[in-house]
Image (cartoon, rainbow, N blue to C red; front, side, top):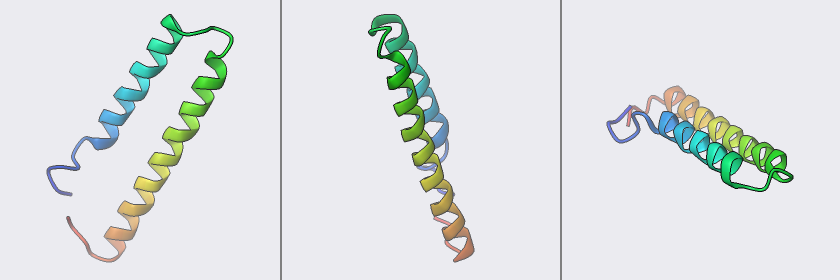
Length: 64
């Protein structure tokens, strides 16, 4: 892994947590469930894509 990638998933987790907290405290309570579910699905998709990319790179011997 290169230095630019290090911590990318962790940083994205922090962004998601901050977004959920802001929406919980300042958003509309009636739509929070939908927002949280949507954000969770998007984040899960992002993580799946990153994992698949990392696996493919490792399989092909790419280190950067």
